[in-house]
Amino acid sequence: MAAEHRSLLCRYGLGSLGAVFAWQTGQRLDKPGLEAWRQRWRIRLSDGETEPVERTFYLKRFEHPPFRRQLQRWRQGHFMLSTAGIEWRNARLLAAANVATAEPVAFGHAMLGPWERRSFVLLGEVEGESLEQWVPKYLSPADRESDLRRRRALVDELARFVARFHASGFVHRDLYLSHLFIRNVEAGVPAHSSGGVAFTLIDLQRAFRPSWRRRRWVVKDLAALHYSTPADRLGRFERLRFLCRYTRACGRFGSARYLAPRIEAKAARIARHVGPGHEVPKGQKYDERGIGD
Image (tube, rainbow, N blue to C red; front, side, top):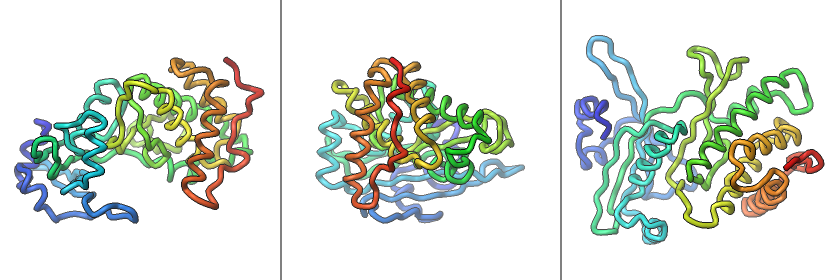
């Protein structure tokens, strides 16, 4: 538990593992496909006595994970670290590497040797809006040049952020637009204005530091980002610009010319896995004629 949040959590009776799992106040965030052993809650707690400030937190609870999940942890070398503990540790390590993530507030687990019985992680609310929602809402169609400067600044900053994340040694394994939040760096200014923006990465449960075949996992991350970006909002030029800026900031995985066909091939496999009707649009490709080394 982070020391600065200890008094707040204890005040609400959230100072023990049992109390956290007994907590039923807040909004439960169920979604299709979320397995019964996993729960997500949005909870609000008032911080301060003279001038209470309501803070929002996200609680993830994992109870009696199935054997396949236990096996996944063991294969990654996490014999004594729970599902929640992995996300807690990843968030702290990435924060130390200057990669913005959801603030890790508290975590706890009950382990029987390497077997996880239950665990939880409490995370602070992330400012801004997911790129999945922001891009179609605020980014004009790719064939318009009205906000070209803002579009280029957005692509450049996103490329630097993803490069910094990969340079830390981590890969995400679910690097879709829904897991990247955008905010304006100037307080009170919306992210769709002309000001500078910053990004925050969420959902670090599957993130890890591969000890071998790192390029394979990096390509998977970049393909997920490529696939989830609407073709009518970011065209070939912006995608090429992103990849060139990325390799300039983190060139250990190959040049843009080397990575582009591999990213496209992996994005096509993601589309086939998702199912019919989710093919990669024709405009959602790199123009290899413009890719430099």
